[in-house]
Length: 351
Figure 1 (cartoon, rainbow, N blue to C red):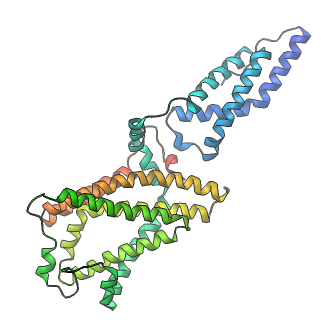
Figure 2 (cartoon, one colour; figure 1 turned 90 degrees about the vertical axis):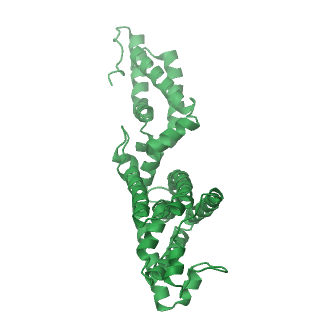
Figure 3 (cartoon, rainbow, N blue to C red; figure 1 turned 120 degrees about the horizontal axis):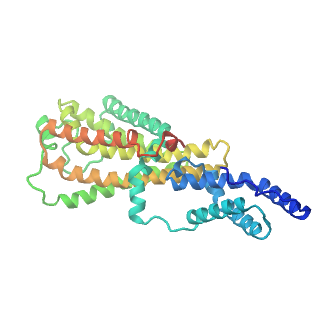
């Protein structure tokens, strides 16, 4: 850095001894000062995601140590360069430790412009595991109702007047994929759908404390229901139409559910395999990362509910429905895995 140089040596024995003590004081603490400077520099550049949990936890202690050193140097040091360097460092650190925080809009801007996507990428292994479990769940649902049709009634909730049941005609099933004549009541329907979908996602996340196993079982159950419906409509040659009908909101909704299950699994995996950290520290770090993902999932559920209540109910064509669902899927994939704000690197997405 060039700032930690001792000022000119003096020929006086007393001053030489004082300078020696100043050098010893500096050398004993210089490593901590350099570490504090590296942490502060990363935070000032908006690269907090590159800092380890140990660095973030050490920040307050390093700041207090540097401030204490500064107070001592002001009384005893003959090294003007070191004193100036430390004064500048402590003032920068104060703003990071005690300075004003981001407001709501500042936080939201940071969240949408890299924070959320980086947190999602940090869940990469958990996303792949959860995706495999969800696909397996849909396959299990299909195979169960193929072997015994009674499984359909165990997997798919129904009620009086429900026509999406085994034995329904093609016309009856096709009618359930139709559109509404108007938008009256659809806003209430959207609110209901958001509440239901968000509840499933929050439950999948909350169950992660049990090593992620209940979260994965919830994924299997929900996807088995989808597999049973695909089997039912395939029997009447309507599986493509059903896929288009579901894709309008499903690419967003299922992606959100996938991230919720992965978030719960991420916490469970951190507890089961904490590595060099304690179980509580590993769970805490994973919980903060997963919670950030879950904030975004709530936004996804709002969007999914709106898509389900409006475009899905008002757009009739199979191609048009696929276009909407495909566009949403492309958007989420690009945002999470291709979007890289300036200054962010792949290291920001590593757990």
